[in-house]
Image (cartoon, rainbow, N blue to C red; front, top):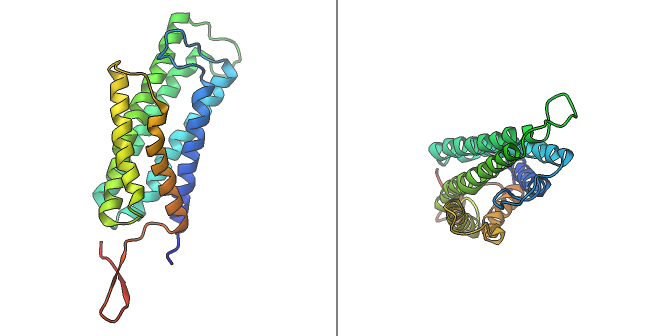
Length: 226
């Protein structure tokens, strides 16, 4: 029975942090600015959400850093590409955080920033767009890249990368439709991609990334070469 490495378990833990921070942060901002009557939440709630998204961005990059040495023996290009895409996703997330903070606070004071209501709405809308572009469009791309390698090299049970590929297509298609104003966001459509990350994290924690073994004529197992 194969065993997970500390690096693989670190990656699994970082995936867990990304789920928790993203799920908890979103409602703390208040209603989405995709709705014209959606108000922004209060100062403390927004600041807490912003802090969670900073942690989210760090964990997003952390997953790729932890996976890099595990993926490199199988494809250095995919390992580097995944790291670059996750870093880009985190950068977009942080740009949204920086955009929305002036709507509720100034640094080093608890006084209200006193911005015009229309400007606050614009900053809120900018944050929503970064969420759409980052987790909404970039995340499916990096998920598809990673899932393709894991499927091709058979590094995890096949159901896991298939969830990643299917979920990536569904989430990307939904967010493209949202971008062009064809539909409203449908959170249920993100379930397969969420299941992909849960399955991947569980696999990383329990057994790590390990290719199937070949059997010699004598019955001895040998690792499949990268």
